[in-house]
Image (tube, rainbow, N blue to C red; front, top):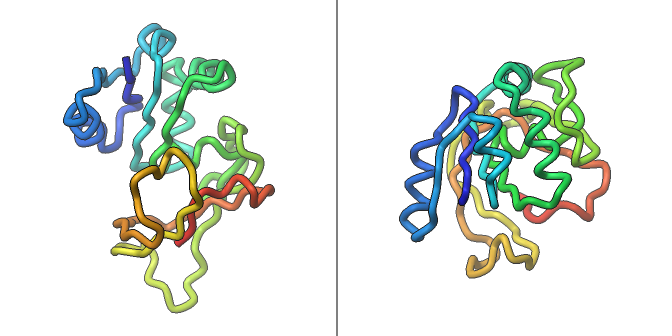
Length: 160
């Protein structure tokens, strides 16, 4: 069973529908017990880093997520779901993320870029199973004000 993490915000239903359209068994849940039984986890997201971490802790799923990821449960983080894998974010100074990817989430500097950035961008893709079947320089739609900057650049799978 794939569990889509319900943390009280985000585009949960559209992500669940996308997985179901591929014939996958999906459950949207914020229950710690349901998450403990998940075979795979998708954490989609829209939200503020600090409020997201606060909500995960309030719902008692922060530690469950940490344990499941540590056990090797496949995890796909989309937007804030990826950001919370990092140590910290400029969006919420002093708030610690899950800490799986050493590094920081940073706000775009407005150097000719409208922030939040919204639009289609080509993505340079490294060969890996996550992007299997997608061509390098495919277009993806983005709506974001922050980007992830890992300490170890070898963990980067794509860039735009």
